[in-house]
Length: 210
Image (cartoon, rainbow, N blue to C red):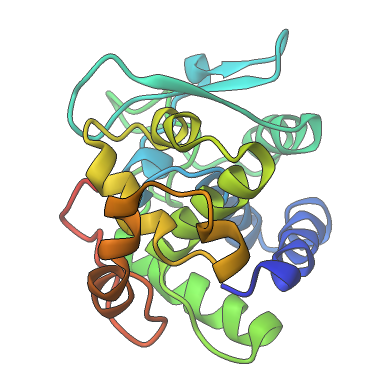
């Protein structure tokens, strides 16, 4: 995603989760907001209420690979909106999923396809072209690197076991950002552009854990 326009997309999501009359659209806006914090789609769909911390403003992320997990900072607006959406019009509970932060009207997990369609619709409205769910995670990585200039910090932020996975994300950075990256990141640039960051290609992460 063009980084200079991402703030506009965030504002659209925030307006939706606070003002939209559709409970499901508010829910989806919150989930896409979580993915702009670097979560994989499967991680966002499996957020549980006990993963939210009201005291220190962090979200505990249960890794898709079953590892120890990680924490990411989240804003007060997002945390408050999650609780508000849960309290107003929340669907009937389904046994074993009472603690899920985001569910369907029947109390089940939100599907990947549902979020994919919503993401493509809303990104087209803001950017003029559709982006996939995994582009949100790539965008989070680039924004974190722009803020820190620390490859290892980005690796921890994304929950990557291998620094080379992180390299494929950062290889897509603009030239000024790439100047300080390790050499192996530069060599992965062509591979990354072809496979991971095309808005017109199906989400690379569907069924994967990068």
